[in-house]
Image (cartoon, rainbow, N blue to C red; front, top):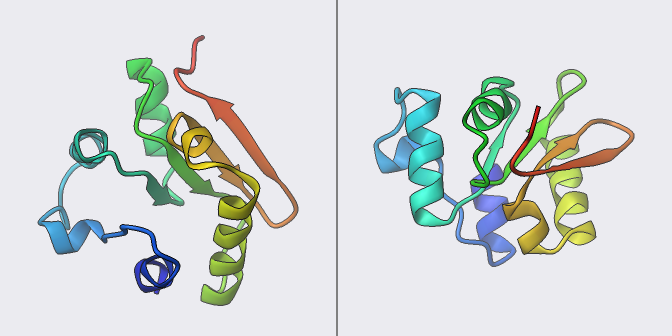
Length: 111
């Protein structure tokens, strides 16, 4: 539903499975997102860890944390992220979303 929702709002969104990445490792998904100028939307903590380890400056990641979300909750929070941020900010950061707040960590993550 997130892809259809994003597309309806005018975004160029695809699901990893529709572009042949259904069983691809996380690193490959990040690589393709970087090459195609996409942002990864996920609840998987491996994506931010990989970006931090690589000290990468892209792709941007929107990371959902803090429990399970209904489709409606997730879409409403995603809309909130998009309304509160310009695309450039999202492309250059890890945006962490939970039930009550949105935090942004600029890329690259330096230890």
